[in-house]
Each structure stands twice: as structure tokens, then as C-alpha cells.
Amino acid sequence: MTKITIITDTDASLPLTLASQYNIYQVPITVQFGEESFETGVDIDDEKLFARINDENKLPTTAAPSPGKWAEAFQAAFDEGADEVLCFTVSKAISSTYDAAVLAATDLMTGKNITVVNTNSLTMAQGYMVLAAAEAVQRGATSKEAVAAAKDVGERNHVFGALSTLRYLAMSGRVGYVAAGMANLLNIKPILTMQEGKLELLEKIRTRKKAWRRLIELTAEAAGENGIEKLAIVHVDALDSAQQLLAVLQNSMDCPEEVIFAEMTPGLSVHTGAGMVGLSVVSKK
Image (cartoon, rainbow, N blue to C red; front, side):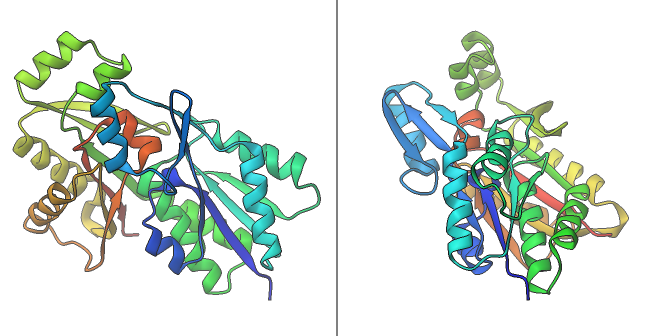
């Protein structure tokens, strides 16, 4: 039987226990504070990230895994007995991760059976595609069937999030400090969603209560009459808020018994800021 190994990057936001359960390897996104480099999921997480940001009042930069890092991950999979590797990357629209993985597969791993897929997604929307492929492989699917299963989930996946503050967007230069200060004064909570492979501003809502209500409305619209098949609550160093959001959601609509709580992880959370909570939903067929 052909052994297929699934590899992705840490922008998939997959909890380590879940990745381990399916033998999924996540290649880390790098976070750079000046001359210091940290690898997501190895020596930095959201809590450590924002503790340092708040201490220095400066955002770090992030970098995609190099082709060499991808090649190391691919080689490790083959050394452990893989016949094929399926690699799912964060959206090409926001990162050079996909291009680096393709370069590694075609130039550094010549002759190896590696398929690289641009998920055109991120966080648990990407993670659910990876899980769908892994589950298909466990059922004995071929690599093509596993990729098809992932893409099917991708077509039914929706992401919505509510920012806690505009402070970090101001630090990144994406909004001015005056505008951010006014927004915080007015208690505005921007709503984000996926658009063309990116997390983009969808709406501006006043107060957290109203923002969460809008998240639930958007989730219900996305789920439609068929309902929710899979649900993840994604957060940035805000587990308590994530649990509260789930309770509000469960009081409003039917939810799956199994719900994943996932940290967004530093490669993405540096752009949203601490306190962000959101939903990644796969609608039923």
C-alpha cells in the first residue's frame, strides 16, 4: 500500500495534538525581532509574541519557510518511509510559502513524488483542508482523491473574525494611530473574512456584543439550510473569549459536538493583534 505523508505550514493553525494524531508535519513560519529569529510552534506562540510586542511596542516581521526548510521536511518524510508527499500551503495571495514549497519540490527534491497545493486559504480553513486530506489517506485514498477531498472542504469553508483592537494595525501602518484611537474610543470591532485568499475587512461594528452577534449571523448565512459540519473557534491569546463566543453560538444555532479551539499562531496573528476571536466553519453538503 502506498504511504502518503501530509505536510503543511503553521499558518494552518492546527493544534499540535491534532496534527500529531494524523501524523501531519507543520513547517514553521519564522518571526523576526531585529536580529532574533523564532519559529512558530517551536519557540514562539501567540502569548510569547504579544508579550514581546507589548514590551517593545514594535511589530516583528514574518517570513515564509525557505525552500531548504521545505526540502528538509520532505526528505524527513521519505526517510520515514513515505512513498508520496502531499503539501498544503497557506494562500499564495498572502505569502511566498507556496512558491518556496514548489521550488523545493521541483529543484531540490528531483525525482520525488511530491504534490504541492495552494489552499487559497489560511488558519483553520487551511487546517480543515489538511485534515480532510489526512482523513482520506487514512481511509486508503490515493493522493488525487485526498487532494479532491481537501478541495471539497475548501469550497465549503468560511472564516469570520472580530478584532479586539486596532492598535496592532496602527503599529503595522495599515491604519493611522489617530484613526485607530478614535475607533477604540468608539469601541469599534472590525469584522474580517476571507476574500480572494486574504483576510480582509468586511464590516465595522460597534461593541463586542454586536460584533459577536454579527459573527453568528454571518456563520448562519454561510451554513445555510444544511447546517455546520465542522467548527473551529480561532483566537489570538484569548481562549476565555473563544469559549464565551462558542457558548453564544451554541445558544443561537446547532453546532457539531466536536469543536476545535485553535490559536491563530504568530505568522498570522501578528497582523490581527491580540484578543481576536473568530470562526472557521465547514458547511454540510
